[in-house]
Amino acid sequence: MSTGHLSTGRTMKAAVVTETGVQLRDVPVPTPKQNEILVRVRASGLNRADLWPAVEAGTLHLPIERTFPLEEAPVALAHMAANGHFGKIVLVT
Image (cartoon, rainbow, N blue to C red; front, top):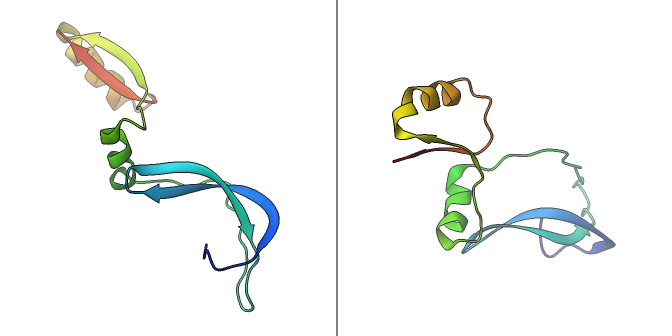
């Protein structure tokens, strides 16, 4: 999205990469220039490099799915390997 485009007056959600990480913002829906199109995105992804600065800055908190005692490390590993979790799996002593 170019910031030089005129706006339609409507807004949309946008993931904006800043110096402190990624922020979800409401931004104006741009008006495409000649020979451009406007595409509606229903889903997208971000990679760790985009998100990590926000985690380090404390502006993005990763969810903890489950905490396991250290003695249950094999169970925690099996839980992670099943790939059905959302968030971090934590081992505690």
